[in-house]
Length: 176
Image (tube, rainbow, N blue to C red; front, side, top):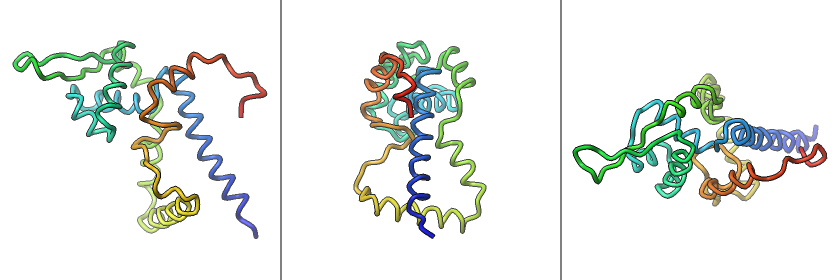
């Protein structure tokens, strides 16, 4: 039995699921996956300095700064100076941000991680081995990886989502 078409189809489905999730976040919630991850971190852990938020979500300080800027413009978070040390700034999630986190879907990686954790160690090891082989076959071992499951470049997510949201709606013929 030839498995190549089935495997390629599965890879396309994975890619498509990531893209659809990213588009749903963008169109329905006006968020990117990294923005949602940052909001969820603030929702769960409370106020954090930007540097700690960046560490917690495994994103660069520059990326998190851009994310915070956009979330602040949308009134989902706010920066506040420490009363004792005015040099220190913490990021607080607003009530609007809390409501959005409660209504938004879980990031793909959280849903996937939960389902993966339910598998036994042997199944997880097999999936890990197989995916690593696929990465090698696709000559993708040297590519940087985003810490969140999203489509596109996490570093450039700031402008990409704004361009997507400003673009005219695609007609049915252009939709996949």
